[in-house]
Image (cartoon, rainbow, N blue to C red; front, side, top):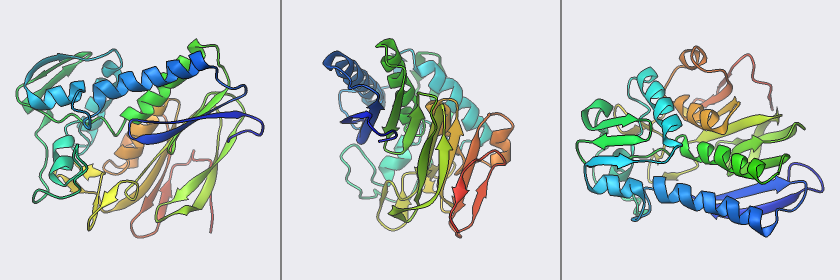
Length: 290
């Protein structure tokens, strides 16, 4: 709970735990609106649901119409795809499934790691319209949870809730003005912290290779040019105005030099490398423990 005396609404959505803290308890209508938005988003973007639009795209090629939020996803993913030379791609779902992170959570690799297809070979994504030349496994997990955080913030504001704090299992958004001190989870021990950071109005999102890991050296942060898990970085944090950008940039820090991201985006960041060292931006306001 970010503030003493606030009230928490906890629920599960898109495969993770959520907590929304508010000054006054959310009433039944407000809670219903939040859960309905989570269900709507999941029914579109989840590759773990057979009835989702993304699952339909994995079954057949052709033209598909996506909801309004897809325009922001398309623009952001395209920019990061270009910056990363294809290392960060919304087509990474095929590579994840190849390594066992599939709709059935088999966690059993089908063979050696394989890179996904190149964007322009199979996918044309403009605004809310997607055309594919072959079945594709679209996976927006690198930015989708952050986007849903932003969408739920919009739902809350539309319901008259102005002070709130959203915690989507480590993707955070402070919808008020009062800063909250956030612990930075140790990448190898979730019971410990490596530091703290104050979060005022805005978002802080994290990505870590230990969050979804299985097998020997297998985890969910892959290099789209090879289909293999990234081994040089173990955890990242990105602080930005929106959770969509913070979430996407936290993942991008695994595969794109921070200086290149800073030239295109306004954010602060922290990165922990596999050799135990840490790098961070000049604007990162956190304090690391020694």
